[in-house]
Image (cartoon, rainbow, N blue to C red; front, top):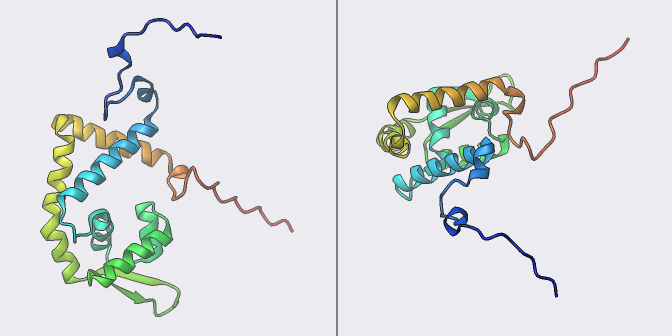
Length: 181
């Protein structure tokens, strides 16, 4: 019978602590970015009342800040799948928080704007969302928080080719071939 001879290990060195970032995870930002996003979304969801929008709040804020924008452009601005944004807007509309209007020149195009009820919802809950985000990031100094936001923004803006819904799960759309005469 074979037995593997493993060198003795320091238990404390290899202990897995829930929530702890493992040394190998520090080598790449993908897992860290996903976990930070998960932490922020979870904290915001817990801070808002159960009947609130929770993860749809950001979409409502974007619609309020970009009134009259086409539904497809909202998906582009938020870097979300158009179908998902359509479902979120359906829900927001059912709550009376947004209104869709059909373009007079192209019936396929829908413009979206926040209603007074939607704006009231933002005014009522935005302070909780901002405080919750600040609480999560409170382990950083004000300067570090600003630097974190600046660095994330710089990375996102430098990589527009990867800033698309489904990136990593779906291949990018092929570029059209030039038409030859």
